[in-house]
Image 1 (cartoon, rainbow, N blue to C red):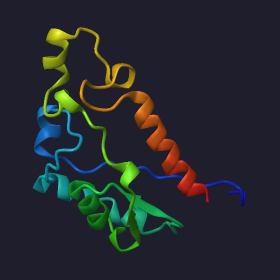
Image 2: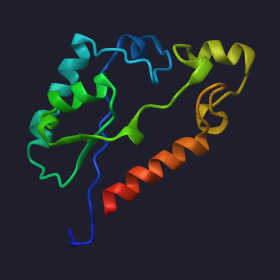
Image 3: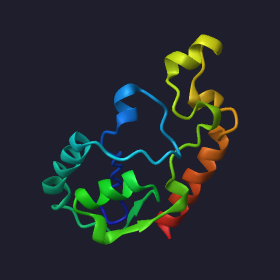
Length: 134
C-alpha cells in the first residue's frame, strides 16, 4: 500500500433487541444482546492484526461496548459526531410501520420528522472525516 493511502474500517455495533425487531435505533441507548456481544468478540483476531492510527466511537454505550469487546477500547476516542441518526418521531418504529402512513419513505432521502435530515447527517460525517485527516 502506498504511503498516501489509508484504510478505513467501519464497525457497526453488535445486535440489540431493536435491531432484531427492525426498529429504528438512533439515540435510544439500547444495550447489546448476549449474541451481539459474541458477534463483536469475533472481530478481535481480525482487528488485532491492524495498527490503527485513530479509533473513534459513538458516545452511545452500545458502540463503546462494541469497541471494547472488539479489542479496540483502549485506543478509542469518543467522537460526538458519530452518534447514531436521530430518528425523531420514528425512533423505535419499524420501516413497515412508517410505510403505512408514508409509502416510499427512505431515511436517506427523507430524514425523520423531529429528527435529523440527510444533510445534517452528511455534515456530521464530513466533520468526522476532517478530524480523521488532520
